[in-house]
Length: 466
Ligand SMILES: Nc1nc2c(ncn2[C@@H]2O[C@H](COP(=O)(O)OP(=O)(O)OP(=O)(O)O)[C@@H](O)[C@H]2O)c(=O)[nH]1
Ligand SMILES: [Mg+2]
Image (cartoon, rainbow, N blue to C red; front, side, top):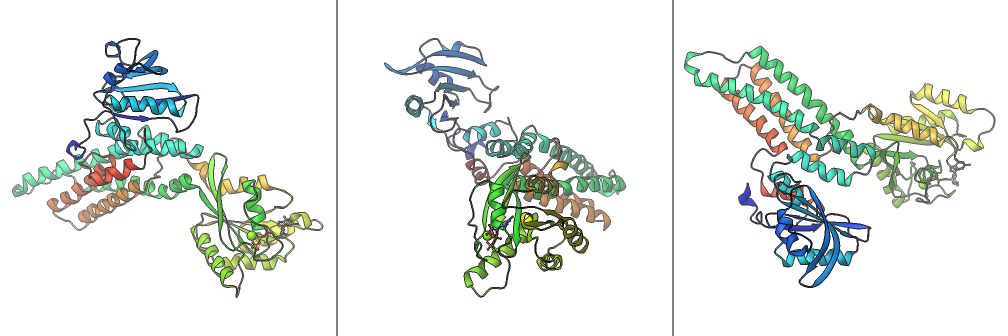
């Protein structure tokens, strides 16, 4: 592993806090020279002689130039984030001061860290496995309570634990198979076939829901897509603006105002939703509008939740017809939103909802996007339809495409093993598949020699200083 990283021996330095002005900034040093470099700058006492996990206040100075008054945190290897000697310099949050201190560290022999290099070292020193290292990036990027929860669970090893169990079961299994091979001439079966079959079925039953969780996990990370669709002038853009609380889309009484899709994210109940306003659905000879209508259809097919906006003053039959025309595939959540409640005369809402629900079998709600009636109820309904409430803190959810791909490969091999049993395949051939499955799990957790390119891609997504 180490030969891939020729600069592994360097001591690295970077700003660990965000760029820009702040009350304080943290500069992180990691590597064999971390403490001696900090010591050369620190005037108060000999840092080399201090115990690990201690804080020291004092002045930093290079030659006779005063740099800053700082607090230094010492972490001696192996008990640090990277597993190496780590020094964190808490300095004042001025960009100039921070740059001066980093430059001084570089002058004394440190090198500027590359993106994700601290976490890469933590991984190479086995402080984290690969899925946990990736969770560090996810936590930094987390933009909602749910995505933070999922990443934290992953960092604590939720996913790793599941994989470790799988791996151990497969290793036991492989060992028994190998034993059989050693005694091949004697024609004995150490490995109880029925029991194996049960174990494999159990493994498949564990991997499948993990794979299914990816769709939801991905949605939580990027925002659950909610398409706002309907006829021109139904009030789609008015609703988008109200949900986003800003004048994002142009609203006008001219039918066909919105031509392109407009989208933005909003947090509802700690979950990120991505609302997509689309061009009104109608037959049109206008080329640009026609492209818009095509895009709207595309967005409908990509959305998890579809809000069909209809003008409540239209006949209920026409509204039900619009729903039918959407020709949605099974599994999409739909809400028929009866808009312009403010201009509805009399008490016709209940009746309209009843008729539309009966014909379509879909939930309805009456709102006014213009005068803000029942918007809270609509938001609650959207949260309910997202099924997000069913995710517990301890549930393992896949949010990462790399994990998804490796797990999908694992599932394919598990199914091959199962097929092998059914068709009475010889033990040596089954053993090949078992090894393949083990290999995919090892790639997931980083237990094999990883390709430099793969590691480069994973850690390159981090920001510098992490
Ligand atoms: N009275 C009333 N008028 C509304 C309501 N919502 C929207 N409107 C009006 O309906 C007209 C069309 O609104 P938009 O939001 O532009 O409609 P749209 O569905 O985005 O239309 P296109 O972009 O053309 O497809 C505007 O004049 C809005 O002011 C509502 O709840 N009540
Ligand atoms: Mg519009």
